[in-house]
Length: 123
Length: 104
Image 1 (cartoon, each protein chain N blue to C red):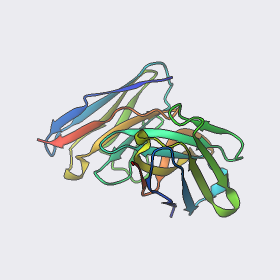
Image 2 (image 1 turned 30 degrees about the vertical axis):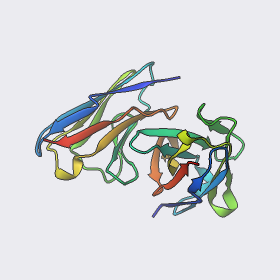
Image 3 (image 1 turned 90 degrees about the horizontal axis):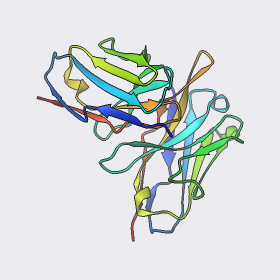
Image 4 (image 1 turned 180 degrees about the horizontal axis):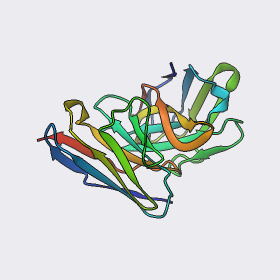
């Protein structure tokens, strides 16, 4: 069974930093692209960042580019999101997700989701 | 950047009804479109990928169609557990704004 367990959320002041972690199990972690998706209170879903299997290719939403950094440790089946210069609008539940690959084809959707970790940016 | 527009934003229906939600892309995306269901307080759950392929374990009353810029999600014989919010999502990871399906 695939499991994604996020941790590291909490309350932080504007301008501060926070680091999220996600530990994965139940699938060959190093073979899948991983992403973070967030959802502000009462709002829709927003993709935040993606890291490919090889750890070198990384992509970011314009809203977080230059402030957030995604990374992974394939030996520890983990993906991370370092969030710097946080703003009130970064307040959201952050989900760790896997890219959907079926019979070797990446369909660019998210087939497994963690339970989410809340991040609140407030004075 | 690709934009996705869902319609309607809100939908009221009854158990046993058939409903359709539309997702329009600002440019052609082939069939790289997925649909998700999200119940309050829960993580989204994938329903359909590649526009029309049912995710494993999803009931057959859910179906998807479309290609290019116009896509639809259809739910037949609505069940109580289907009342939730639905999102579409395209290959560059943009999501639609969501459609909230409420019980009439």
